[in-house]
Length: 261
Image (cartoon, rainbow, N blue to C red; front, side, top):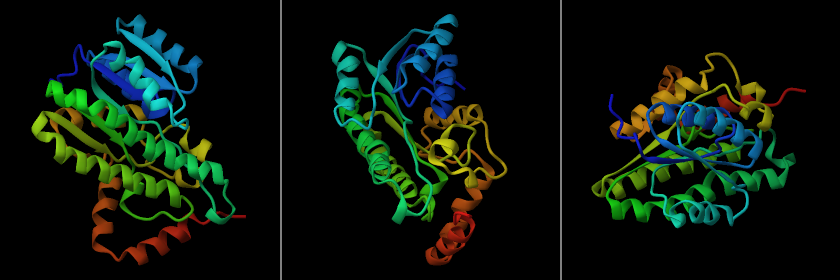
């Protein structure tokens, strides 16, 4: 299908690994120009070299979204420098698995800053120019964890619930301005997330490739679909949790997720 992304500048956060890399490659395949941002400059440079070798125009903005000044710095380096960003991909995120009472406090707070605060800040900066141009696409990466509480990933699931509802509310607000907003809710996906979050217990079976997730996400974004759950088990879970009591679901998830000695 024609996506409308050809020749447009796309900004991808968290572009150094996993779904971020796959989304960047898929956007490039569809003719977009890329602005890649993440903490790890070496990985961004490697991906940029790969994409440039395929004929894609690429720029890099190294930034850590845990730093509250980062969104403004990213905006200054793009829209502030005369680059019209028509596609904003809020992909950067992190998690932490384990009992909240003994978890690392800074990591808990970092999840809120990166998964929520930075998403709101970046989106608030880039939406006004999109409204003025009466075009734009915004992808917010949430999770199937956004549909129910997830004990032992309590903060992560809560931040992803925030992301999903933020995307849905914003989608309705800006639809009349020609802007499409999609909440992407992947299930377990091949990436560094499990290792970084210490959440290998959640890997399970039916793990999707980041490439599959990216392709389905961008099809949904191009078509104006407001929520996309790229795998069948995730769609089944999202339907099931609407029918069952939240307390019961939470207890079942807790038994499954409880850390083992």
